[in-house]
Length: 487
Ligand code: GLU
Image (tube, rainbow, N blue to C red; front, side):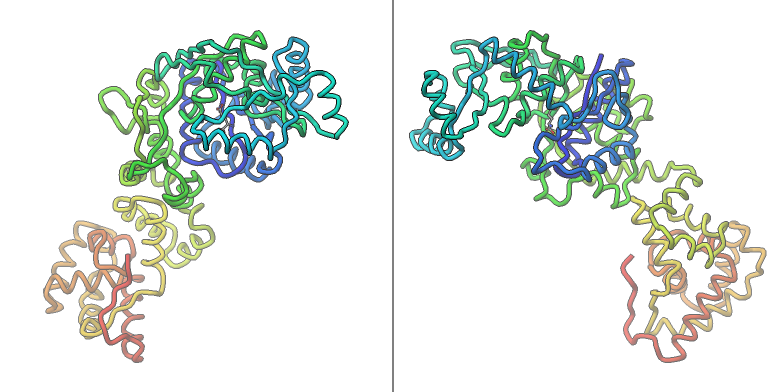
């Protein structure tokens, strides 16, 4: 069993592409088959090396590994279409010899005119086959004019091409609605349909799982397999991903690249899980599954025939679940990578152990790495503001907290009692006491329980924070309105 993912490097890997890759990958891994990565870069104007790198990098980040591909080689390489020109030429010659193709000298303008005429007359635009009937003499004249032909496949009339699609069931096309499609353009470059069929055949791909938008290409590809004498693979066309308002998910709905979600602080585990539940369901309606099960329970029969809707709220929920479960050491690596050099600044402020305590507290309430990093920035940054009437509470707050013995800060249970006592002793009403203190310590009113924050931060940092505010308030730098920064 051999599957493949065949991206065109004309942009970043988007969610739909990542899902296609994952479906092919999971399907191959489950069957202990082979998963191939092939780069479809026949369009030199739109293909860019940086996108090849970005796509490979994002797939690897997600945890998708391939057995054969441009970077690893394999028995059926090269795995970049731009390096397979000689192979396509050879197959074109074979089709020429056997009379499956004919040269077409029509210019882009002529074809466009034909297309417009057809549309005006309400006919579906199909190539008129004008060049099919040229005499050898007419061809010679056109060649003399310097015209370079493209090569079109002669679609047999009056036939029905049937595809047994593993998701959609039997889908039939009558060849009378198909057009004589171009295999090789006048500049010598192969088209997608041609290169794809030659490669899938030579790379011995047994199953093609891809987006439904390629279903209309499938009858053309099936005709080509026939002409080349290769058995076609099995096809499975996966319904497209829709935005919540029912249109096809695209850039219009914000950035839909995998990289965007990566940069927004989503975890690879959550994205992998989420994408495998997008248009594919697991037994018992389970939504979160261990990775082994995501693979072992993946089943083409469980791919939905109807379109999947991308739901950012569900992805965010899933991410939160995964984030919560990450072992602290792993979380630390992820946050450190996400925060970059700032992590060291925080370590200097708080020391490693306390920073990890704070990290663990924020872990429980954050949905993404980005949330977590902004909570830490706010808590350990200098941007907290406290003003107006609350400033007058500072001396009482400081005094009450300074009386809590230092070693109590290491004991969460005792700290909880001491904090209650400190509040009573301060004479500040409980809600105001806790709210003000939380703003002072982490820059916002809501957040982890206070005694746990004190435990994480330690007495020194707590008193320092209060001190800083007292100084600022005393030097008149405080605002006169109550202002809490956005969390
Ligand atoms: N290069 C094509 C794409 O990116 C591949 C389609 C296919 O899987 O056949 O859409």
